Length: 88
Image 1 (spheres, one colour):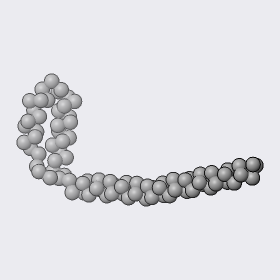
Image 2 (tube, rainbow, N blue to C red):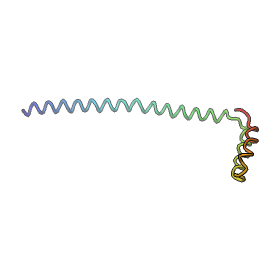
Image 3 (cartoon, rainbow, N blue to C red):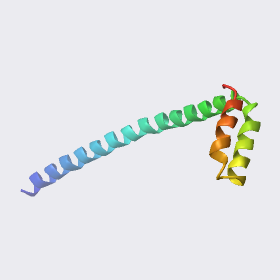
Image 4 (cartoon, rainbow, N blue to C red):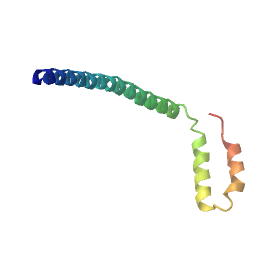
C-alpha cells in the first residue's frame, strides 16, 4: 500500500513540476514583449518631441501665464490664443 502511495505522490510531484515549468515559460515570453512595448513607447515619445512645432511653445507659455494670472477672463482670451497656434 505504501508503495502505491509513494508512486502516486511521485506522479503528483512530477505533474506539479511540469505545471511550474510551463508557468515559468509563459513569464519568459511576457518579459521581452513588455520590454519591446516600453521601447516602442519611448521611441514614439522621442519622435513626437522631435517633430513638434516649436513656434507653438511661445503661445502655450503665454496661455499658461494668462490662465494663472487671470483665471476669470482666461476663457475669453483662450479663443484668441487658439487662433495663434500653428498646425503641427
